[in-house]
Image 1 (cartoon, rainbow, N blue to C red):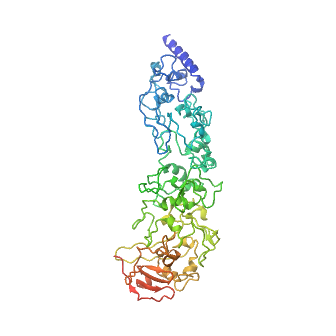
Image 2 (image 1 turned 45 degrees about the horizontal axis):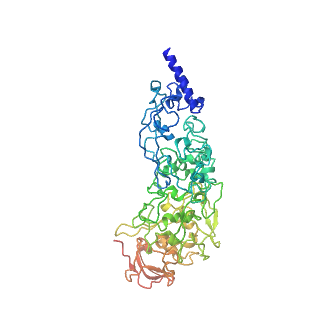
Length: 636
């Protein structure tokens, strides 16, 4: 009789509590928040783990007739370099304190002020994902009173009265973000795709996130360009780490989590690992899904796993660590998929990225591909490029410094037409069109005002953009310096030894210098090596140097251009490699004079005319030396 009476009283109490809370009991009876030992027979006890009609938690202002014992934990709140709002603090009567009484893991789920005999056991323990702990540094910011204007958030958050989100279902509590702003603890399945998260609305397409984060504002707002972006419109179902059916429906949740992120940006994985989950997918039928396949192998690739990126970093500061994260090049909130068309000079994948202009000034929205590259390959400090640096293959050390690509590419003397348009000077070896990997013709090379792009040379080794079938972009290549095609280079020999010559084959797709052959007709330029090539209109000795001596193009030519050069010594991008050539020991001169057409260079090659020689004033018009040829001075 007594046990029946106790059950009846608890039943009436639970109904009364739910009525006072204005929440219909049936909505929660089968939810995860029903902690009763047997959810089927004891579902009437669901409410009392949180609520009580009498003897509620003794905290003034605490809502909900609270029955669960409260936590006394001190919390570490969200912190990042881009957090702009006020101090976060769960106040004694805040709604979030109720949630954290279970979810910080310090108080037992069944620890209540009343009915402890009935609540002493629970159906399930607190799950790992439900245990927030006391360190909330990598969880979404909340519980702050001071709102500071932020161009990336909706304007209604910053009004003096009636502060609100942009969605009536996403409610602030006393002007603050609390747990209950995003979570409805009484109804589990409002978002059927995330049934264990108790979200207040269906969050497909990022609906909940966009209630505060404004996707309609221009750059530099964080979500500028989001609405037409690849991650907002893609219907791909190959990979959906968010649990939603497609990339579009997953939206923000494809990359971010609300609680316990792997980084202070609330990413799912440790920085680039977030991208790898979709973009290093062996089974993907999409070229973008395969962009980073092989990142764990010994290929040449951008160092995306190097640490040091911060959205507020100063790339020109000497204290900024050298790194190359995915988001240094890509704006994941704005990049476009193949269903849309971006300006040709930029490309879909770089839309919304920041960069540096040709004059070295920063821009929040790059308009050309090279501007993104100049973030690291222009004026930035801490470049590891120096003698002996071989992480990306052999690196020449030039007579004139060649490590600032921005300056090289705006040279008035010699440059590839990446930043500045085609000059109109046509050499006979220049093809009419780029020769693609599938042996078809690409863009015109001789058109007035035409440009090359960085990815014409630096790319994957089978990119779809160049007639291949693989992903585009300079992510990973089996070729040195992340090049699209072979570009063989002589390397520094052991002390006392000559430089080993290359065994040269000519093929615009796989030959020794296929990268150059893509735009320059090397067969016509080089000929058979015994006579002047039919298209060798300037130097007239490319055949003998390349085919017979095995000398790489890179020994004499700097492919980006020549900063601070002169037309006398640096025309045609001549900038000698100081590790593979040397001074004329008789005169101390070390250059190729393109006006008098004479060479003062010591060549260190093993088959240089059979006997290594010094070019001391050799005329490359006639081949007759202005001074006597001298034996090679070998490297020591």
